[in-house]
Length: 258
Ligand SMILES: Nc1ncnc2c1ncn2[C@@H]1O[C@H](COP(=O)(O)OP(=O)(O)O)[C@@H](O)[C@H]1O
Ligand SMILES: [Mg+2]
Image 1 (cartoon, rainbow, N blue to C red):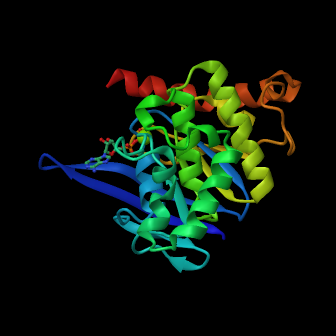
Image 2 (spheres, rainbow, N blue to C red):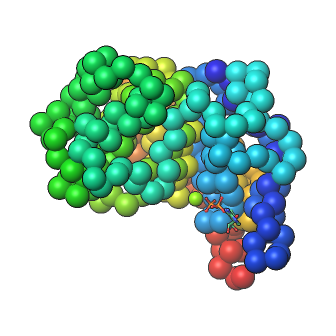
């Protein structure tokens, strides 16, 4: 499922003022690719994901998913937003089942699928717990199971591990890489953490400050089957980091002057 972003811009009207969130952006993301977006806060990363998910439309340009223009809710993507979307009054299992219930799928098969995913993310024992009874890491695992439950071909992930402590972040990154390698899904991953972007992605795209445009992209040739604990010590890792940081840092500093 190739994802084509074709000269997409987005303007918002906020408090009577027009805000340019995204300059014309074009990119092609191949099926099964893992791409990371990095850029200063406010450069339109979440806006772009929202448009890929079909939550709102570009001001100009278009987004094609597998050759079809995304004009409404894009059912081929699973979207993990910056906010935890678990409902506090539903158990872990009921939360994971929610997307299937919305699609009107039968209860029996859905429950089997939810159980399998909860085993995969090591949460089987907690399926009857409520989100407030879970640690931050467990909530992320539950959100990951929910993201995967209807088997979308493309995963959109917006700073999914941003709030986790360093150790837990590594564990979740490792699990995500394994899921990606096992399933062949396309992943579009937004992060402000360059180490995370280089550790996970095959391609890192750097955005300029607002209105966001693509400034630079690097292919990360660290292979598949990466060990997120070890990959950061590879000599090439530092080269990628330096190149990307040289592109990203001025954009962040520009924002600070505003
Ligand atoms: N729904 C909205 N209404 C008005 N302005 C918005 C809306 N969503 C985002 N923006 C503005 O668009 C710009 C880009 O936001 P966002 O995509 O959230 O950036 P990022 O995710 O890169 O931090 C910001 O200036 C933000 O205030
Ligand atoms: Mg954002």
